[in-house]
Amino acid sequence: MSNYHIKHLEEYYQVYRKSIREPENFWEEIAEEHFLWRKKWTNVLSWDFSKPEVKWFEGAKLNITENCIDRHLATRGDKTAIIFEPNNPTDKAEYISYKQLYERVNQFANVLKSKGVTKGDRVCIYVPMIPELAIATLACARIGAIHSVVFAGFSSKALSTRINDCDCKMVITADGSYRGNKTIDLKGVVDEALESCPGVKNVLVAKRINSKISMKVGRDFWLQPLLDSASKEGNAEVMDAEDPLFILYTSGSTGKPKGMVHSSAGYMVYTAYTFKNVFQYKENDVYWCTADIGWITGHSYIIYGPLANGATTVLFEGVPSYPNFGRFWEIVDKHKINQFYTAPTAIRALAKQGTELVEKYNLSSLKVLGSVGEPINEEAWHWYNENVGKKKSPIVDTWWQTETGGIMITPIPYVTPTKPTYATLPFIGIQPALMNENGDELKGNQVEGRLCIKFPWPSMARTIWGSHQRYKETYFSAFDNMYFTGDGALRDEVGYYRITGRVDDVIIVSGHNLGTAPIEDAINEHPAVAESAIVGFPHDIKGSALYGYITLKDAGESRNHKNLSKEINQLIADRIGPIAKLDKIQFTEGLPKTRSGKIMRRILRKIAHNEMDNLGDISTLLNPDVVQSIIDNKL
Ligand code: WTA
Image (cartoon, rainbow, N blue to C red; front, side, top):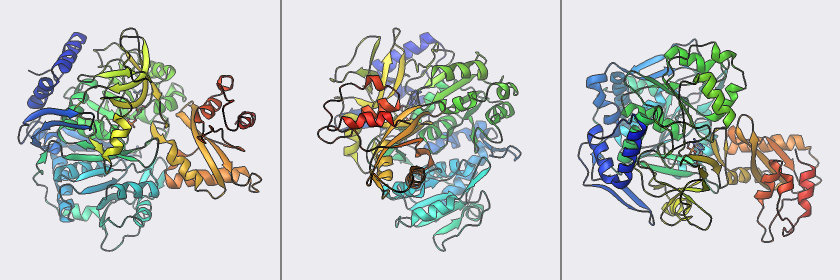
C-alpha cells in the first residue's frame, strides 16, 4: 500500500524520509496505485540539472482527462464535478456532474478536431471564469493539444505576445465577461490582438454577456452551435508521459514573459497527490479555490488536482466585493464549502471590512483554509484564523510557483502544527536548500538564505517554450546543481520555513507577479519619458504596490504631471494590463546610477520603503546629489 493519504505527523516524517531516501520507489508506488495508465513506464526518473533535463515516468502512456473524468464515471458519474457560481448572486448556480463533464469535454474536443486542431498544436484560451474555461482546457488535454490559458484581464498587447510566442493556431474566447457590476469586451481585446497574430486560423466564441460583437467571416465561430452538433463521445489521445500538457506564462524580471512548459504524467501525479493531502479532501467535501484558472493555482487546484481525485470543485465567476464584501462568505454558506483556498491580498481586503459580514453567514462547514501567492502577514493570518476559521480550521500557507506546478512547502492540515506566516515543512518528496551568496548551502536551523530545491519533483516545469537556454540561465545557473526559486527564506529553530519574499526584480502585487522590466519598457514608450525605474513599496491590501521614478526628456515639460501620470498608467494598462498600473509616480530630475550607468534600484527601493537613514554608501554613485532631491520630493 502506498502512502497516498497522510493522517499523522509521525506518518508525515516517515513518508517524507522514504520519499527522500528512495524517491523512485516512492513515486512509482503512488503512480501505480492511484492513476490510470494506458501503459506503464520503463524508467521512473532520469535527471541532470546541469542540462537541465528531467523526465518522470518515461515510456508511460496516459491521458490526464481519463484520470480526471473517465475513471470516475463508474463510481461518481452523478457526483458534481464542478459547481459554477455566477457573478450575479441571483443567477442560478450550475452543477456539472462527472457524466456531464465527460460529455461536454468530448463535445468540445470534437469541435476542436473539426477545426483542424491536432496533437501538439497550441491553443490559446482567453476565457473568463465560466464553465467553458475549464471545459476548453480539458478538451485540449483530451486531444493532446497544448493549452496556453491567458488570464482574461490581460491587455491585447499582452495577449498577442503570448499567442505569438508559442504560435497558437486557435484562440478560444467569449463575447465578454462580467466583473462585479462591469462588463469587459473580451472579443474586442482578441480582435485587436489578432491584428498582429497571423498564425491564428480560428476563434471560437462563447456567449456570455450577449453583447454585440463583430465576427470575422471564416475565422470566428460561435461556440454553442458547434457544440450542439458535436458528439458526446470521443476517445482520448494517448500521450507520452513527457508530452507537454500546457504552457503557462509567468513574468520574469527581464524580457518577455516566460512560457513555462508542464508535462503530462509528472504534473498529474504531483498535483493530485498534493491536493489530496494539503486539503485533506474527503469524498463528499466541497472544495473552493478562488483563484482564476488563468494562473497556475487555477490550473493545478481548480482543475487537475481536484478532478484527478474525483472531487467537487467550485468555479466562481465574480469578485469578492460584489454585490458586497460578504460574497465569499455567502458562497461558503450556500455551497457548504469544506476547503477554502484564497490569497493574502483577498484576506486583507476582506479584513478591512470588519467582521460584521463574516459573522452574518454560517461558516461552520469549513475545515481547511488555504493561502497562496505571496507571504501572508501576521495580521491577516490571525484575522483569517479567528474570523473565518473560528480558530478551528488550520491554515495551510502553501508556497509554490508557476514553475513548480504544485505545492512545495506547506503544512498538512490536522497533521503539521501551524505557525503564523510560516509555510512550515517541505511537502513529501521536496528537498529545499538555503544558500548564501557564495553558493554554500546553509545547513542546520536558524539560517536565512536563497531558497533552492536540490532534487527533481514530478511536476516541475521542463523548459521555457522556445528557449531552453533561458530556462537554464534563470533557474539552474545561480547555484550548481540546484533549482533556484528566486525567493528568499529562513528556517527557524524547528526546521520550519518562512518565505521572506522575492530576491529578484519581480514584485508581487495583489498576488500577481510583475516583472519590473516590461513595465519600465511600457513607460519608456511615452514620448515625454527619458527613463524610469520601478520598485515595490508596502501596501495595506495589495501587499506590495508599484512606485515609479520617472525622468522626463524635457525637464521643463509643459504638460502637467497629473496628466502625464494618467497617460503613463494608460500605456501600462494597454501594454500589460490594469494590474500593472503604478500607485505612485514621482517625476525626478535623474535616477541614481553606478559609474557603469546601472540604475541603483536598491536605493530607490529604500526610499520608497521610507528607509532613508539606511541608504548605505552613496558616495560612489555617478550622481549622488540626485538622491537628496528624490528624498525631498518623495510621495
Ligand atoms: C510567491 C503562485 C510566500 C513567491 C502559486 C513565489 C509565496 C511566487 C507563497 C510564485 C507563499 C507564492 N508564501 N510567498 N505561500 N506562494 N509565493 O508563479 O514569491 O504566481 O516565487 O505561483 O509567489 O508566484 P506564481
